[in-house]
Image 1: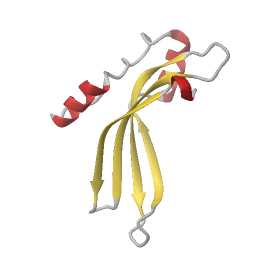
Image 2: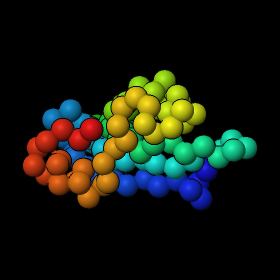
Image 3: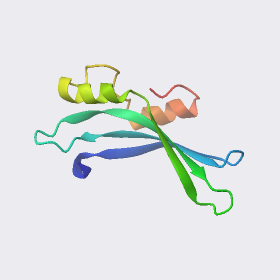
Image 4: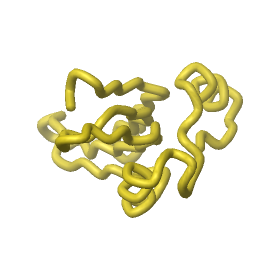
Length: 103
């Protein structure tokens, strides 16, 4: 649900050697089901491939910090199930700046 979802950028890195842009971001919100279950916050790394001739994005790869089954089950069983929820974005940004693991 867009009204109850929040996306926060942690880092953006351009890599000219392999024509990619890597965006690490945090997502939290609710699922658009009748009882509006909450999804625990999690981190996603999106890698955009850039076409060297046009400069346009030609691919996208999303990697989730927790498995999809964990997100699904924790939606129904509560955030205490499975992997811990992602830390607040301010803490994740500080960890990224210090070269630490984000999840």
